[in-house]
Image (cartoon, rainbow, N blue to C red; front, top):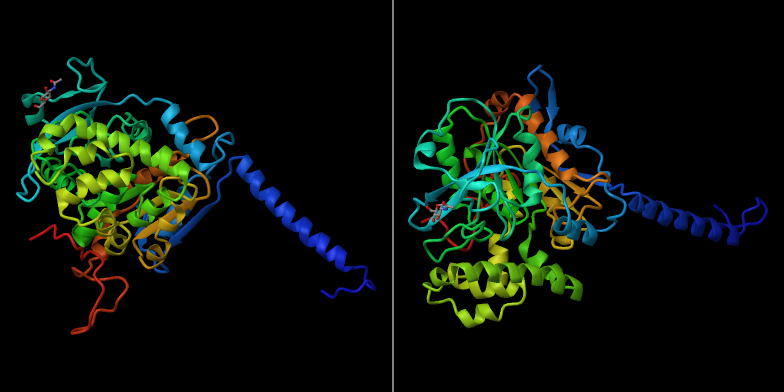
Length: 458
Ligand SMILES: *[C@@H]1O[C@H](CO)[C@@H](O)[C@H](O)[C@H]1NC(C)=O
């Protein structure tokens, strides 16, 4: 374009046009924000795995995800990540779910202690509740829990210091476990959470995959015909992602979903401390919740003589709790060393089952820089969907309810009902330890995404 007046275009007209274009761009961007329309973006490898549906059609995992995730239309009044996140604490449509609990004893001598698993059961008249609608299984009931039915079963991992009762978790579970949803489900409570007692000083951490591993093994034996699936929320998503990477080609899950994963924990932590508001609203709230949890279990936790009660009492923020508790529990020199080692970003590269991750770009707890887009571009097994709006485990829709629940349900029902998982498993036998990124030639160095610094296995 020339800037002459002969064809009627003057410099000022050009400037004006550019300015008007820019202004309308801003208005449109903000309009869509004001209208609650989130922009979704997808990240996945060029060779996204091919799935076959039961009617014989082939589709890639990426195309399947893109075609079934509903448009992300959120409540326009909750127009940023803070509002979406805080709303989830203030108000949410309740989805009553009834649980029965069983305490398992960890078999792995490296992580001794008990952990509580809450199984979704049909509504009943609860007596002696631990939490609302949650009671213990009797020994007799539990001994007869096994079944050879082939219903799909979902294993859930909640967020930091939460539990099976969390509204965000129930919102995802509720539509699946109805009569017509047809699913069974259980929630593994992180040690010490959801009013569960601990018997050793060990709580949970972002890499604590051992209780999940034992539960899946037990489920496999107790329900031999049920296809198993996993979903993780926030910290639980980080644990789940690490677990999927550790299991690699031997993973018993047919597919899994990670919601609002903090991914690169050191980057998330830096983001969380980057503004006064984030420090004092979110990090402080998480620090306070964790201190409360410590308060319940202090007598047992302090059996670890490396933990200093006064230091824990002085904790205000999340990272200070990690410094005071996680470092002396697991032998990390600093909380940053713990964050780097327990991050689930590299684990993405070792996953060998269909894996969907959903993260909001305006999540105030997990900053956008922590999301591992490059890793998803390098794996055929994962699809990452980012949304421009949604907050942390928020994604509230205009009429209530959460988009993340719709998206997760659409994915799981499609995988369970329409995808021929047998075909998929048979056609994707991967040599153990194969790495996506590096061509592994004999005597050449290679990249092992699962090699960590805290030696979790002998
Ligand atoms: C549930 O079981 C635990 C562990 O056996 C026990 O400590 C607790 O008191 C029981 N709770 C109720 C409400 O029965």
